Length: 373
Image (cartoon, helix red, strand yellow):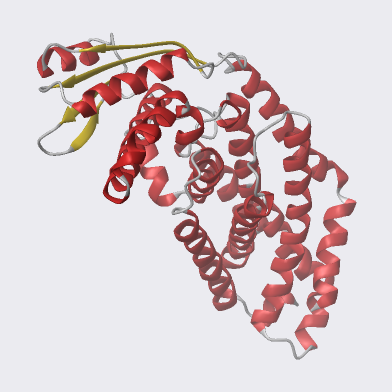
């Protein structure tokens, strides 16, 4: 088993041309796309237009207006504009005709705040949703404080108004820049191309050590586990190089928990490598396996927003959320790094690992020792 792992690692390390392409190409794409779409150039979020409406002029509306005033004066936002609509219909018309990016509706009777969009531009919509969620969360916290200690409410409100950035988790350094976005998107896309290494590894195993496996008392699962570990080791080296280069050269934000980032990416590597191995053993043909990878990965990249970010309600983005391991990794990474949300990580990792198990099981079922002769 160990000899199979070492053989895979040595073969990949000797192929410096492929190793170089798998590292240099993502680095070039991150730099090119990150710079091309970098509209704000570190000068803050620009040109966000929000309209809000409430049928009553209640305390929560006043608090919301104070909150928006604090947002507009902060360094993190440039040209942030907000206006109160005279009616719900007029507010919706502002959004439908493109004069506002979103409508926030405060319903005092139902004790809720809703956000409405028209075409929902992804970046502006995300900013408005984050701000609204932040306000909701902080008002809920203040309500809880009131029940416990009413005298502390005014202090809590003042802190909230004056320090909304810290309380809402959208510090300037945590805003997702284009470089941050493509730093993650290109790395997760490159990892899926690790399926190519899986195809080559399965072919190399047959040609280099096939006869020895034919007479050796080695189980199917040990053979495929060894193949998988060899490919995963090499792809992991490429991934670590990319992450470290992006972090220290491009200044891509990977958050404070780099171990969690590596764990999410490692699970994707295992799945992609398993896919490549499965394709070779299913079709028993290197060219067919390679062709499928080269067709499949660009499609998955497109529906995952790897090349161009897609709005959440875009049909392709909806499909990607359900079927693309690239999208699963992107969601887990971006939400944990920029929103401090971790609830998607366990489901997405579980799905990714489950796919890897399925691919390896398919390989084992498709495999016959006679194929190695």
